[in-house]
Length: 286
Length: 286
Image (cartoon, rainbow over all chains, first blue to last red; front, side, top):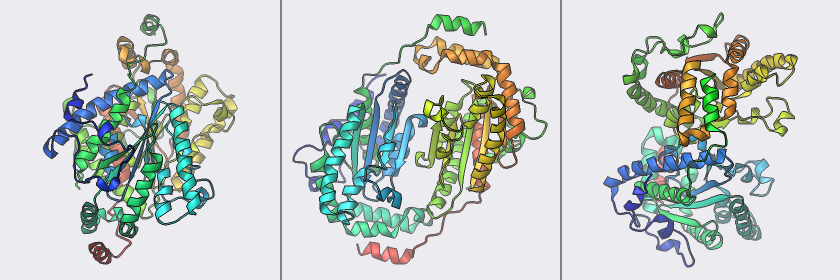
């Protein structure tokens, strides 16, 4: 298995899109394609080529867990509506064996969930060994919509950033590679996508009047995202901000982040923990 | 959306593979392809064509759940080792949006699970509205390996058949279409597949010496399956026995069963529960 897919990047998303000190969300061009050598025309082929390698890496990752490797991956996806989370799940995550994937969509909390600490409903969904867990929205809602709509007192919102860092630190200590992605969509592009949903009856189910309410709070969301990055993009669990006006770019970038994580594990096929020749004989006699 | 895929069958799996009164497992030819008009060469194209329709049906199914439709689907997969459950998950289930799929693999029960009734660990994994749930092994292990290896007293095994029927009846009453599939593999074909796993180091992780132990109990398993069919293939939650020596056939057949279930729901795109024109104006002004 080569690393052929690497050649599509001048600068890898794992470096160029990582949120480090001094990061300013307002400076990101949502319609850009940082580091990618190709264009819209080449993106489909590049995604397919990447998918084949991603699929192999994921199988090896899963295989090792069956022989005791405790490592796991958690991909956290956050974004404004229509930014393309669904497309990431379908076109990036959908390329690997569904047995090795665990997707959790976090909706508006229920009354029971609200009666507990905000991390209570999150913890049980952390991925197990050999799994790629995906959070479609996450505990970060509690410092995004939570902050913008003042769903909790300011002091509680403040406390949550530290609680999140402590929680993610635990996940990392337990062998989890935590990859946090914001799909960063421009306001104009969002308008087009929402208009498209409203224009097509078969897309109406994806639309919610609340989407426009949240859209009207865009500047406040941008502030909340900025604070979130400042407080929770840690060495252990960094954020990546992915320009998302070009769907093809966002998919390639997320695929690249996942493959980086898998390549970084230096995986090989696990060695049998049984006597292969003995089993061949038993099987022949059966 | 046409029902073009139907033309590939002389007799639909939903009828021809259904376990009814008088069914005898020993009479099934595991290397056959009942009702399929094509052959190995055409199967790939037919599966792809079916996948496109399955994908659309599944999206409509999921969409309706967002507007209050409570229906769900549960696919139960049971089989001897190497029969191709993994391939079904990847090539049939993998064709639809992963957000709408919930796969649960039931392994050997833990001590905590064993301390409870056998259905205790199963219930929480029943699919929610709009979801296709898949059980990769299931509560039926408790009357298969449970019976063959006498893991519980005979009276307890007996009790379980009725408990399973009552449980599945509940699921059906709650709006679940329950589709139970046995992938029926021939002993010779299994031997070949196990030999292949042993011959290839990158497949060793899929092999377990216990697979041969179970293989040696094949006649007892066949008996246990027969009793299971006799006792639990109900009107509400029928079993389908799918000849599985030909992987391409088994995949087409499972796809067909799932599409039958979806077509039988007479789905259409849900009608918006908001004022579309009003929302268009709000959006334009935003």
